Amino acid sequence: MTDKYTQFVNRGLGKDIAKKLGLSQPVVLRRHRPGQPLVQGPVLVQGAGSGADELAATLLSWNLDVRRHAVPREKLGAIILVLDEAARPEDLEKPVLSAAASLRDLAANARVVTVSRAAAGTTDPATAAARQGVDGLLRSLAKELRAGATGNGILLADGARTTSPSALGALRFFLSGRSAFVDGQFLTVSSEAGHLPADAEKPLAGKVAVVTGAARGIGAAIARTLYRDGATVVVVDIPAAGDHLAKVANEVHGTALQLDISREDAGQRIIDHAVERHGGLDILIHNAGITRDKLLANMDQGRWSSVIAVNIAAQLRINEALLASEHFRNSPRIVSVASTSGIAGNRGQTNYAASKGGVMGMVRATAPLLAAHGGSINAVAPGFIETEMTDRIPFATREVARRLNSLQQGGQPGDVAEAIAFLASDAAGGISGEVLRVCGQNLVGA
Image (tube, rainbow, N blue to C red):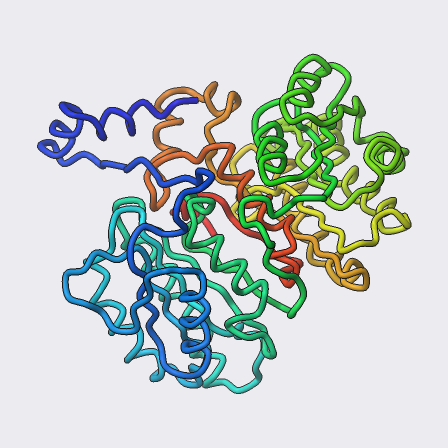
């Protein structure tokens, strides 16, 4: 699960050889470590209007080094481009080109974040054009950034402020090392719900979280990250994975539940375990999933039905049980693991892509059902992630897959876990029905 090429071109002789031969040089990404600064260097806030002023003042209260005007040749840790008042495409010119003048001053692993309004919130053609224009410019800019820098955007629904709790939560996530493999993506803040945690290092303190498919890989990384962030964790997997599951449970000081999630009573068994062992249930992470790849022309009923049963039908039944339970009422959070295959498709994965596309449809439709309880549901769609499964891909295919994104490398299981932990927190309480891609801005497909 190691990207030896990235390691090679970032050290001594390998670095020199890559430069001489003009080879790609993906950098080692800045990933979250407890106690590290939110950003590495000054933060430039570009944009006019009260929204930009209020956001800059908030960042100052976080003890960040904030600039409202660029200092020539000063290395920057981040640029925040506030475009919430753009009403016509022409309104983008001045703030965008002002920010452009500072792009060469970005430090390695810097961040660019746009804050604008969702185009869906207006019926005025000019305003919609300006707002949708931000989408195109941010995604294009993200592909121009280098040295591990990323570009992402926050979309505000009409009525949301630049300093709404979840706007600030999303900003902290995008600025931090937690979003190392998130690039060219947007999160929409649809309400004033949520709040920033008192302890930024323990945003899930006091929460009980269940993670399915937690015996290894991404699921185990999710369990570890939720535990690091303060949650009490229940890990769930099939009985055949019992030994690995017990190891993860011991590591996170949680409990293990051996369970086939495709069982009709899986939802109730999860609720009963969480309530009996830990007094309640606040967070459910739907991570369990399987692949049974085959070209559709050669697909048999067994391969198709098993993938649908585990990857989406089980989630729907478990969610129905949770929504009906009195034990899932206190600002509950659900996060499902989807896949970029469900967005752009993948040869030989019609069954898998259908199931993961189904996850995204489920998330959008379930969001209003949880809103009545102050809850949220979102999905994370990983791209190429370094796991035991991808390590078995033939070398040439694996290398191509690694390089086909803006960051020119595969992600780590922890990158997916960080995005899930954020969406499971109260800092994301005003974000619901969203799909966040963790793919390094994959260059192929959607």
